[in-house]
Image (tube, rainbow, N blue to C red; front, side, top):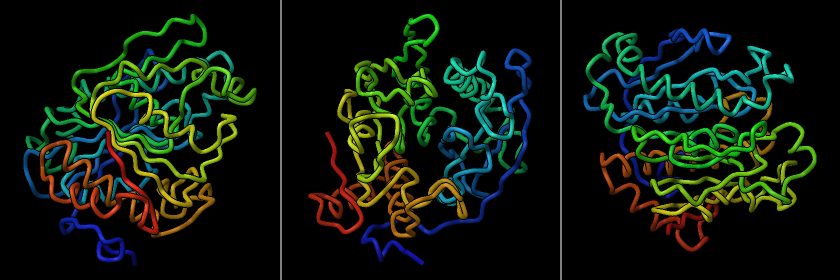
Length: 313
């Protein structure tokens, strides 16, 4: 087992958690009600909230290595099954594909509108979450979803119009292995399967954020290689940090699930690094504690650590 001592980082002891699913939020305009999972520690009060958007095709049961870790260390984590999930088979409908990105943002907004309902649906959680401290997180397609909530502008692939869909209730983001800028760097494959990547503008993002990128994440969506996934760090304004995972491919060692078949770079050390650094950042950005984040910045500075490098601007 990889421990904090193994990576050289620090962190609090875990606590027991509770998880409830599915909590159903009616969304008739969506074509399918929104199914939500909530995970939280069984003790504690004033718990910050993480709303997490899964990658393309996944669902509310994914990303247990991250969700379990965050919940066991003091966060209420909310996950939904978005319309592109393989469980729903909506993405195969060509008439709906261009707006899958927008449905995701609306899903997250509906979650934020119903935090009281979700909290009350978990035994013993009512009154213990702090709705004033909300971080949006996501992997891959979900990273774009999180970014939109803090100001990322995406040109609608049908109308060409880029609207401000940011939500002031979101104070920061954690974006994992997510897409960079569009334009002539996109491959024909990207334009076909993900037309919402055609025009992305990061310049309006000012909220704090942590970007996590694997230096071997060679996606078929861009001609630029792995550096493409660092754009949310390099192109956005404000207080940003970048964790580069050495040897990391798109699943960053296996964050999408304990036994996820799509993991091509299975590596417990990389998963532990992402778990520990993201938790340290979440605790830092929500004001819970700054010590672990400062330790991570020191230990991972300069690229000398075998697992990764952490830099900030």
